Image (cartoon, rainbow, N blue to C red; front, side, top):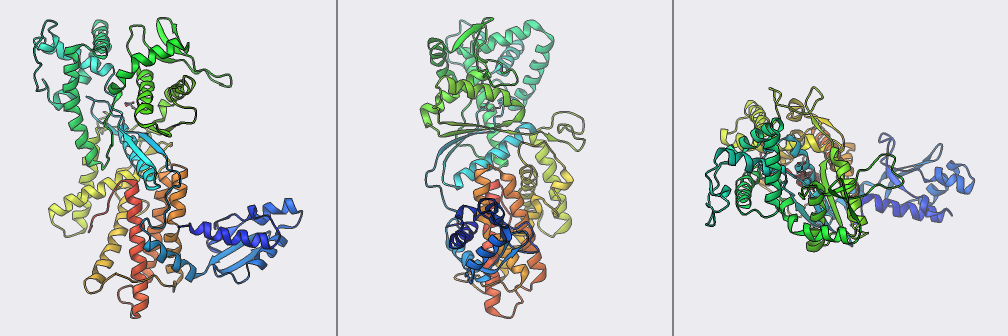
Length: 587
Ligand code: ARG
């Protein structure tokens, strides 16, 4: 289905042509003076230069040609040359009825869908999930859903950090604590135990202990580095430990991401890239892309136009170990082989931008990806506390994701219990749903690349631009519809011409849905979807306060209201689904 803006633009183009002007000037936009009009066209201003005429004359000509166009209730040329438009109420209601019938609420899928890999989440195995990983999960999940909604084939990959130095550290620490384990016996030839020699709790303690110890003790550090190297090169016992770490960690991660309503299609990681590394290194050497620098194998990626130095891509360390650059390149080899993506999007902390510049350049230059494959780095900003510094616990430590979620849920639970009379059990469940909306909306409503302040009080408020406010609005609509449905059916009811400014405002807002989706999709900008649902929720609540809905005596009018409510609810629900959260039945 064409968007409302597209339909209006078609009419406008027609009028420009009829008036003897080029239709390329007929661009219609939302009004930036909603007090005067609903849509506007500034094309006469731009056309003035081409036609050497006063813009108002051109605007008048075009308005003359729009005449009695059925689309518009009002068309007006105003000085110095704007064309102001108000849409005909019947045009809007018809449009909305078509939207209601359409399976995707009027959103058209792309004619040429792409295969897109979204690389997001990126937790590091054996380290607890912390708030830094929250943003990647939240933003990535939403982007994945938006891309998919437009019809693309999208694969979300968690890309675990499971192949680096932290693994060597854990192995080394484990050997220090339990040297008798068979993994450390070079002569052991039997089967290793099935069960991991540690729990997730222990694992989460082992890593920070080892990491701190290594910083103070050079020999320990060396040992951990060597263990990393041995692991990467097939040491049997270390691989077995690695498998244990993975099992224990991944089970825990799955639980955490499930609570966040984040779902990955692939649970691959850096380790999966290992098998592509030797051949890739051979290719890089053979074709002359890589050279040795101070013992390390590197590929230069500096370009003439660079204002700053871009250091070479590091392929192998002097001890032969693979690095972050290496696994990301080899992962591209793997993705190319398995999925042939048109595009790969990385949702990662913006402080890693340089790494991705290096990797992308190297991948393009060496033919690891095709020239037309799009590699996109979507860097996000830091989540700060109210003090403007990276978010910490009250004690100043790194905030674990689980604790943050618990804190929010408890806050929500209190509010829900304060306000309402629902059972404790229901309140708990609802608190979880609303809490998640508070966190996700709080994050997504900011432009991803910007830092933002995580403000528990503000995010959990039922008023203002928050997730709970949006959910509250949906719940309010649901309850009206449910009440109506106790004795009537919503089947077959139609939206009617608006009978008040409030109703029309709500209709126009609802009708924007597919225009908004297109903009959100093209700009990969979930924050614009948040801004939209905030406007839509406000438009609904204004209408609600000004209108007797269920007590309206005119039956046709009442049915029209309910049909509009139903569609508004569907649009809101669709949007929050794309943002990655859901609304409860009651609140
Ligand atoms: N594990 C990394 C980190 O915590 C993020 C991974 C991002 N994705 C990637 N393909 N490098 O910093």
